[in-house]
Image (cartoon, rainbow, N blue to C red; front, top):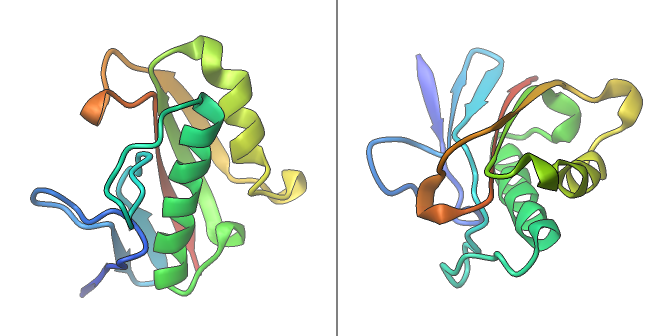
Length: 126
């Protein structure tokens, strides 16, 4: 059986998907973008602020599943412009212990939902 994870502290899904699914001891998150869950507004004034909101949204999903960033074993980062990689990486990296950071790939894409600049998904294990 799979368990659907939902929190009001992250953006509500629009469409046929959930914020995360827990199967056994493994959590699969949907990609998070920089929507403020309280106001519904996109946070895009800087790539750092945008990435920070994405990570706060991901933290809320992990919290709802009883996990933290220490449980994350794999992350995927989709970005619109590889020139933003350094700034995104600095914010992203502040949420992890470098010695125990998860595996990760970062991919530049042609477009993201709502024309955002960054989207991040994760897999975590209890």
